[in-house]
Structures are given as C-alpha cells and as structure tokens.
Image (cartoon, rainbow, N blue to C red; front, side, top):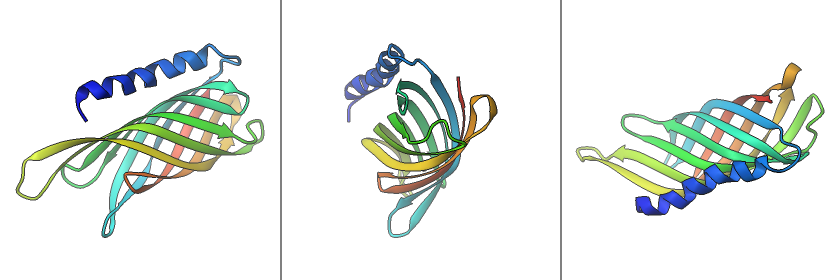
Amino acid sequence: MRPVRVFPIVLCLLVMPAVAGAQEPSRRTLEVSGGFTGFFDESIIPHGAVGAALRWDLAPHLSVGPEVVFMKGEGTDSDLFLTGKLVIDFLRTRPASPYFVVDGGLEIHHGAFVGNAPFWVRAWAFSFGGGVRLNGPSGVFVAPEVRIGWEPQIRFTLNVGWRM
C-alpha cells in the first residue's frame, strides 16, 4: 500500500469523531489499554499490546471513535494499528455492562528476517470481540476484553477508562 492510500484512512479516522461529536448526547469516553496479543502462525507469536481510544456517543448504547494500538514482539517485530472503533453497550447504566466491539483500519508491521534488512508492511486490519465494563464512581471503569482479528490474532486486554 502506498502512502497516498493511507491519507484517506487517516482522514476518515480524524473526521469520524467530529461527526459523532455533532450528535446528541455528546458524552466522550477516553480509554487506555494493555495486555497480550498472540498472532497465529505455526505457533502463537506473543506480543505485548498498549493502546488508547477516544469515543463519542452516537446513541445511548452506541459509540464510535479512533483507536491506536502498538504491539511489540521479539526483536524488531512490532505492529501499529490505526483503526476506527465501534462499541455497542448493552447495559451501560448497570455496575457490570457487557459490550460488543468492532474496529477496522490500517496495520503497519515492522520486522526483519534472519540475516536480512528490516522491512515495513502496511495492510488492512479489523477485529471484533467483547468484554464486560465494570463501572466505578465518577465515570471511571475497568473492562477486561477479548478480540479476534486479522492479521490472524487473538487479543486479551484490560481497558481502563473515563466517561467524561
């Protein structure tokens, strides 16, 4: 994928929250996450994962926004995901709220084969999954989450967030 093709994706990720912010209600959610990702190959290729997301409510149970996730494996193996995220909350006002999440966008992979120069690969990426948001005081929450995605992976994270 050439850099020229990346521009429309980044533009959509930046404009989508502005459109969502124009809707009622205008509550925002800020999240940070960390955890484990396993890429499927002949065996699981382990990566640590950290990320951040900002979401705007479109409806009482529906929110959208950009998400950035960085994953680090062994050596030069790393992945950066720039995606748009959609979350459907089922019981938002309850102490424990199950939710469904889906995202899609761009993956930028950096790696090197043994004895070769490093390389970069850009590809489309998506994931889906869910979790349970444990709501605390003042809009703070903790949410364990599991996602399955492409490049073939399984992701286990713990999200900590704040509904502003």
